[in-house]
Length: 177
Image (cartoon, rainbow, N blue to C red; front, side, top):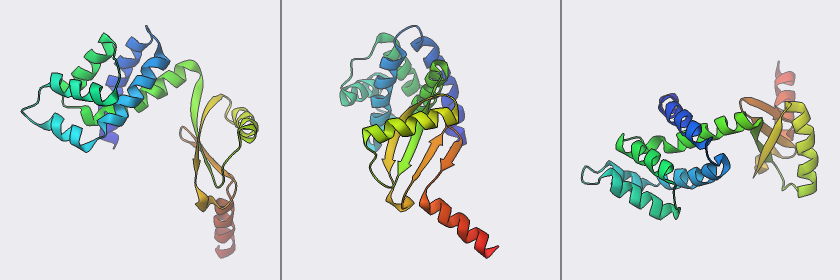
């Protein structure tokens, strides 16, 4: 996995530099769709075939994504395909978002909750999390019933775990020590 991140980093940096001259958010949305399509096993098999050209793979990729790509984005994706790095495209897109978020002063917050969070509750939780982490957060909520109650928040490499499951595990360790 570290190798994939190493391969993806220069592509993401170059892509971000070009995207800054345009609409970074629009490019991010298009890249999300392309990364999703690039994960398809059949497409990867087609791309790896010696009979298929980078132009053909690009045509299939854009048709499956149902996106009209700018010339710069088409050139980028075609370069990724020509270099045999289609498998790295999702990692490139992930690192692109990290760069875009850092430039905008925001971070992705992955919130895992045992129960569904209402929009009003999410706004309150988000306000306190933004104070805690010291930056604006873009929430992504995932239901995880195994937490029993509470939430677990992952922002970059920081984790805030207030779940019942985590508290029970801490009590278990304290009692057995």
